Amino acid sequence: MNAEPNNENNSDIDLPNAKLAYTIIQSLLKSNEALADLLVVMAHVLDEDVVKALTNTNEWEKYLESKRELENTKIQIEKFTDELKKLESK
Image 1 (cartoon, rainbow, N blue to C red):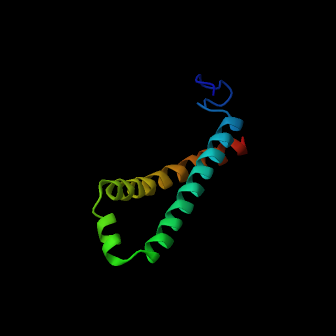
Image 2: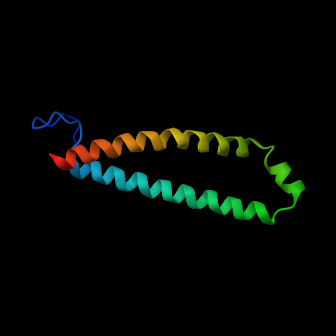
Image 3: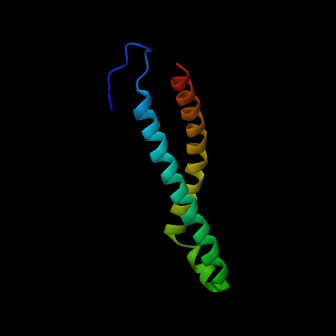
């Protein structure tokens, strides 16, 4: 990616790289959502004691924190998408 601003429109990123970044981000989000859906399905087949034990682990806490961070990321992606649309319209 070009680190220097584009002189034509004072942008820090050019349109092809912005589209590439967007595609990568969307792919990662879809993967994360598929994993979350799988966890839900798996949780339904576990008995109550196993679920209770699982939700009392550091891994579960990390998972919940990542879900909270993902909500903030979605807001940032919306802003990025708006900027990408502005680049496309130039």
